[in-house]
Length: 175
Image (cartoon, rainbow, N blue to C red; front, side, top):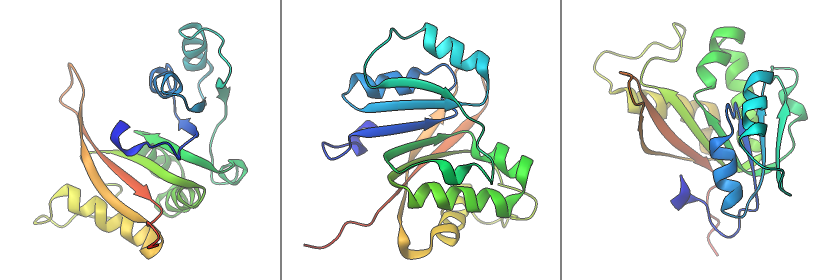
């Protein structure tokens, strides 16, 4: 993700920050960073693993279809391995609306999904690679309002799991 962060980016929101590792990493790169998680035990780990520092904080916040509208704009938002939980909890339509709201309120949204179908309501054709399936879905959610790019895979040590990482960004204006 780091190659996609530039000097124009000054702040970052990490949704589902868990132990805060990525939040603090980007803070160390000079960004004002807020990590949010709904699990207090994860926030306790994040806070205990990071000394108090100006411009770095961890907040308990449960994002729901109703509460997502309270999230202010950020230059960069990380939404990593959270979305499929929203689809399961709230359904595909509500999760798509939440994702759209975050995309509209960020210049760059890093979005990670497990290498699988999103939901039974959104089947993946057998002949379509999962990466293309996700790209089609994201293009349907954002239309032409955002540039969408696949940027890599995340492998998890000790697990069979692989997640796919995308960046959803504001199209560059031609000057």
